[in-house]
Image (cartoon, rainbow, N blue to C red):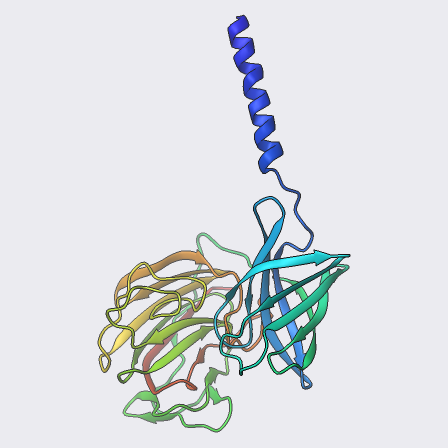
Length: 311
């Protein structure tokens, strides 16, 4: 009996030491934040994640209006203000991007010094929780491209998109294309074809890019074929050769996405943490359109079918 008591007490002491060693108080800065940066009078959507690393270091990820989410090696906190710097990704040549901010109520507010030295103001709110439904009731599937003309679609700029022989084509780099209709949760079937070396993408709700690119034979990556750009890597690269018709079947419920590419499930029920670069906005708790990327390379689409969740 004494031996059991000693072992029990020893176990409690050990557990106490573990909690003391590894326990952490959550910093109110921690979490995921949707930033709106004001640049030259325009609102630019961005995203920031702040989290613990080890005893007391804060690290994170940042996603700007283009490119992928990039790591932040350290977020420093001094006198109630935080700051971090990140090297340029696709930004123009210049200095590192510098961020400063502080918590005001339930929001973060601060400044960003861009690579060109200009200072911009920003404000951030926590990323909203999006409801996931285990057993959704689906509505009727419908074609959102009629195969005849561009009814229901709008180019974001000068239009280079054309319809030929039932196929929606962007013959060269130009404007992105968005659906006039907006959606919450849905299943999307789409078939596409691209020439050698081309690059495009499909933005779900106009916010989360599923990458389309000529990446045949490469190791799977979150910035290659079938990845949710900068966040989720497919479990295998199933890209076909350029010039062949390929397909995505994508299910998006809340933040969770499943992607079936060319008949194989490559991402299964994974959580998208935030907007990807190039998003129309980061108002994630509102419906959004389907966006086809046309500003990178030539691309063709056909058989675009969406099945929205039943209201």
